[in-house]
Length: 554
Image (tube, rainbow, N blue to C red; front, side, top):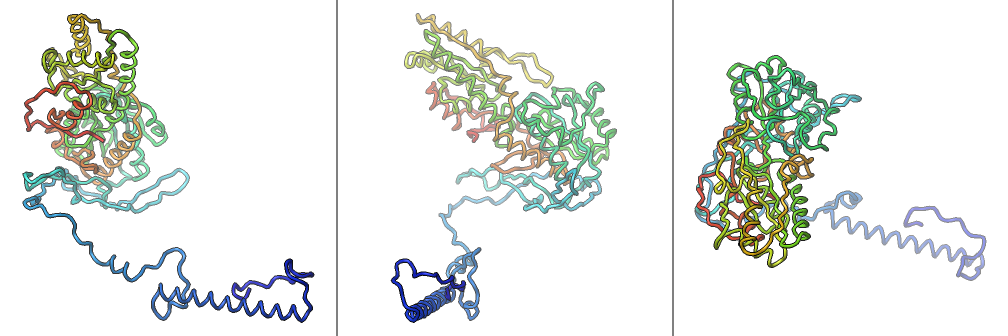
């Protein structure tokens, strides 16, 4: 008790259990011995604690200080190691260096108009509490950049281009109290459109305190039609739209009229316009940006790239692509079930979207593992002969009793020809490749004395109208937030996207100059398809100047 500083316990009336009865004098002697022993133990404990403290905290004052329980003390050796700079590791590659980096700069409205120069803080607005500004952990500048070509070798050129990194800026070009924003979605549907709308609205309202946000209905037509008045977008309106597919604003193709769009922006006093769409939509967005500057309108125009086919160049992937690949798995599984259960010689065909590029078909094939033949626009279809796909299908049916085919909608134009008919966006009408493949399979089996039971599944529009999965929902959040950060800082004529897994701001002329991109038929993604399906390899003379991607999107 002396060692611990606690009170002595009350003495019992009888002798302690386990001890024999003692006379008063004997008990006093025993108590004295116990007190002496306790004092000795206390002294030993105190000495040990002092010695340990002296070892851990050198110096004359350490013996008087109690060791911290929240932070372990560092030894002198570890402190010296932290102060010393780490030694470089790895071997130096002679002749491998980047001598010049060319940064693609974004149009800055501050060079044409007076900026408000409002300090940027994350404002959490609530109906029940005052706005609270929180400093961002990381502020970006227009000198922060991401190098584009990170995969290099000795023969690589000693220069690289780079894109400005996305994120909040220190100063705002616009005073949030005077901002009126507008959001428009154009072109075909894509998983994640509602997520993007929601994140733009949430970021404008909660992070910047913007009160008036307009939703333009029906694509670019909504700027021109009295039958499609804009709707007010608030956090309450968009709170649950991310759980639904499609776009709450609706969409359409074409209907671009620059004079009517500018008139709308002037009439509604719009200062920020967010345009969600593909390369054609982005060309229109850049026209709006340039026309606003020419007419002395202080309006920031920000794009968010959208394409179900994943064929927008420069960025790692487009939002909604991974969701579409995931949604296609149900159709492929259904095709396998149909092929396996329908005798004799069951074959299931699934047609997926992919007008000029086969990214969805390729990634759906790789993710499934059940596909025996994949047909894409980038690789010509050879029906018969040594490299024919029909003999390959027959062999697969003989081996396992059934087969599954995945075909992109734009494949086979070298067999069926190109249509002269186009839609409102200028896209050619595609030939019916799925039905053509089905007929050719039935014919080939019949000519070889066999019967083929072929089931054809076309889930094209089903895979683009579903809600975004978790990966795409996160991507949409990053796209929406960073589009707002850029617009509030006075940047215009740009789009957002992942470049080497980092969010960047890309000048619209750069991203549309090389879009649409295609799959590299000599790349590793197609090589992986050949290894999975074991279909015949076709040598394709490929022009290296054509924008392409050989990466498997993860």
